[in-house]
Image (cartoon, one colour):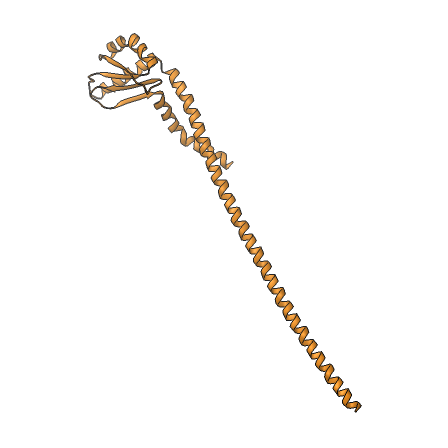
Length: 201
């Protein structure tokens, strides 16, 4: 009887041991699976966070580049506008009656040198220059260029002069606006190059 009891006890212990090993093995598998899942989730979270951070960084860099372009454009526009105002003032000061008379003489000489004879010369001037040219220089100009110049008021001229020849539809523009625009158009590419150099530095 004792042998039978010992055998039953041994079988029971073996069964318990096997069940325990099975439980431990199952628990270990579940633990490993949960650990692998957690590790994968952590990697996915890190990957997603990095992708979002990279996207946000690229977005910020693009916004900064656009802001810098806007600032450079605004700066260029402001500098050119200030330069234009200074140039207009300088041209207005430099365009004396004597200088404008010299321009008329040179234009007529060049016109005649091209093999044409002008039927008349028309000069468009600002209100402040019109009377001075009429009163003091018309006679001497007519004697020099053999053509009686006609002086007219131009409301769109603040300083300087526009010269035209009768029979032609083209006026040569020596107004403060035209000269300032010409100089600014020449300086604009150089100004952009300077601004780009400053950006690079």
